[in-house]
Amino acid sequence: MKNMDSVVCTFCGCLCDDIKVSSKDDGTIEIKGACANGKGHMEEYDPSPVSPAFRGEPVSWDKAIGEAASILKNARSPLFYGLSSTASEAQRKCVALGDRIGAVIDTTSSVCHGPTGIAMQTFGEPTCSLGEAMNRADFLLFWGCNPMIAHSRHFTRYSLMPKGRFVPEGRKGRRAVLVDVRETPSAKAVDRFLRVKQGCDYEVLSALRALVQGKSMEAAEVGGISREELVSLAEEMKGCRYGVAFFGMGLTMTSGKDLNVGQYFNLVRDLNAHTRFSVIAMRGHGNVAGADAVLTWQTGYPFAVSLAGGVPVYGPGEFTAVDMLARHEADAALIVASDPKAHFPAEAVAWLDAIPHIVVDPAFPLTARGATVYLPGAQYGVDAEGTYYRMDGVPVRTRAFRERHRPTDEEIFDRLLEEVSR
Amino acid sequence: MAEKENSRNCVLITGRTQAQTKGMHLGKTGDFYANAVSVAVMHPEMFKTMGVEVGCTLRLRSDSGEISVRSESDPGMPADMVFVPMGPVANRLVGPDTGGCGMPSFKGIRVEVTPE
Image: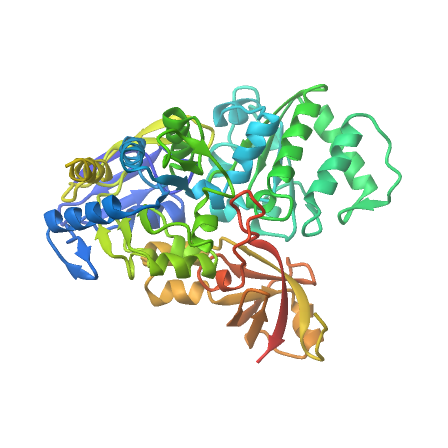
């Protein structure tokens, strides 16, 4: 039996780094301390070697790499998409590959917190680390997110429950409010739940900004929330010692999108005239924040980047994957550690199915079904080590607790880069 | 769209569920995942006003497509809303228009809900 402490779970943006793993002599493993999502992520992955495939048939790695390189070299408008569940070392190599062949590179951010990136560029993001939230925050605002399901240990590790340096009472020392369109399991964990009418987030945020700025409000309700509730929330936020506002897809996926997030950032900025307040996006995939970071330091932009003209050009709506596929503008695709056939609108999926596409993924996602080339790499955080970025932008070195029999994504991109450069 | 006698015009939102995530870990090509993402959730009162039982098959139709899924109830849902877990089934109802920002509207889609 071999025990390993402080293992990092790479499933979601929380990157919990306190997981205990026991590897037994019979080859089985026991995971302690992870949530159901993390446990499933680490336990269900089988690190046995898997043959790559070409047109659904197992082939050698040489053959698979050769076919993949041929698709990429012959494409006139190749699209790279995903990158959010692989290590930053691999992301860096993938960007180099895209640069070499003049690809468009988009990450899962575009159907996640892409609007947050646009809002950040437009309005700025007054943010902090999860450590600051844990040690200082006596008020927490959650908007359009459901941590109990999507980030199951967020409440216990970083926000609601932990005892912090300036919040020694833990849960008793914090007030928490959730704003959402439906009463999710997370509503039961907070002190107050406010139901906003679907699609009215921008209006409610605008009303809150006005109240925080000291303006009066005549309307009896805005977006389904009464004036009394809004006034009381504004006063509570202004009166806290240190507030942190978290938010999720409830703002980015609903009408208003980047403008909703911009208004949320502006509310936090306004609150800093009265107290200390910060905002953190609830990033979903384990290393989606890393994908943003790597693309930004390599090209200057976080997602939706075209390298086709030899210089990086940024274009949400133009170089984002859903738009390119729905408009039939991509003639080949490289899908990395993501599953657009599960998460894109059907019309975009139909075009992806119609063009040659390569899938690099340790699992066999829906996108691998029908893929021209399938390249199964190792799973970072299980049988490979690498760097992941937590949702607050803090880099964390992941550890491997199983023996590796597969190539890493980084090695796969190295080989592809070598092959397309011949 | 005009409302038929036992159909309702609702707003669709999609999102993560525990079962959808579990199915993802077990394998998206497996039955558990397919089952986890093939469900529509509404407030209990919606079933009463439509004159059907929880568990019945519902047909959801949007401008982009149509799906038939089993139903579940959740008192946490608003009356005029239907929730379908994120995934390939819900995405048949989602249009590809991103409004120039890259993000389709996965939440806030007008759908007609009809019992089968």
